[in-house]
Length: 260
Image 1: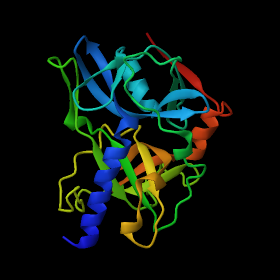
Image 2: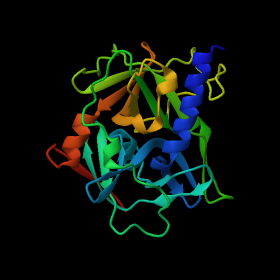
Image 3: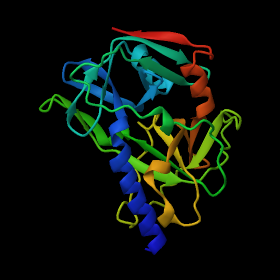
């Protein structure tokens, strides 16, 4: 494996360590200590408020099956059951939950600072995009731990145009997600899990600096939220951050989904 490949793998390992504290796995509760991991979300700060950000279809799936909703951060940690109303825009496929303040003592997740959320999703062809989330096939409930066993995935790719009829270049970003070209944290070839469970994952941008060794984790910014996988083009389709800003500022249209 080349030195560049090893440098990329090493950088993504740094990303996992730096940003895992902001990302959670979202699960449907069947009964106490049992459930199913559905998607991923991120905890973000906007002004003085703290929000959970995810894809709307993650919540509508849980609600349609008349299940409770929970989230967990970190392998083996207890889950937290959610109560209250989510702001949902089904057309854009995005949802937000505003946590009541002050946050309770069981809230062990950190909120991503507003300064790490990009104002624009504009990317150059040389920029690197990466997704951080929890594949469903590698996450499960553990009755013994009263929590969720989850293995995260950090994957870096390039901006790409999706051929999916769903894709609107004004609303969406495409990011390569090809299981045949995967570099692990050690710089060696690795296996890629199925993308199910990555819906709602934050998509980050690292600006190209001319040399991978110049990349720094603080330079990463959230530019979108993963919505779906385009199997034909082998890419992730994400909602651009501009639509998320509109929802945060209460200027975009939204409905509510309630969990009790």
